[in-house]
Image 1 (cartoon, rainbow, N blue to C red):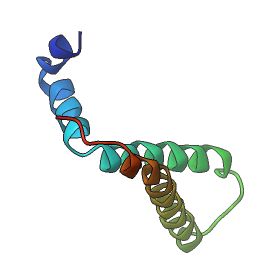
Image 2 (cartoon, rainbow, N blue to C red):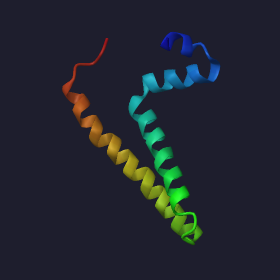
Image 3 (cartoon, rainbow, N blue to C red):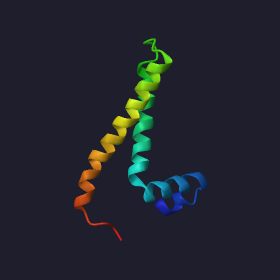
Image 4 (tube, one colour):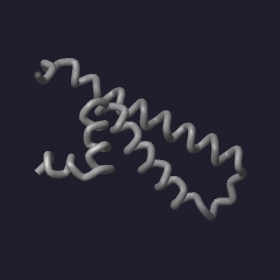
Length: 81
């Protein structure tokens, strides 16, 4: 099934990217999810542009830290060949 999905032009590129760089792909997906939630939940708060930028940068940084911490357990496993 995964091989058939890889034949779809854009989806295949995304799957290949995630296979080659799983931590970066996870960071991107988690960052997008957190930022979307932030935008939806804080849209009526009345934040200024600088405050929005700071919150988005902080959210992306937290997502990166989360993926980095989760990846600590990857070091215990043998690499797949």
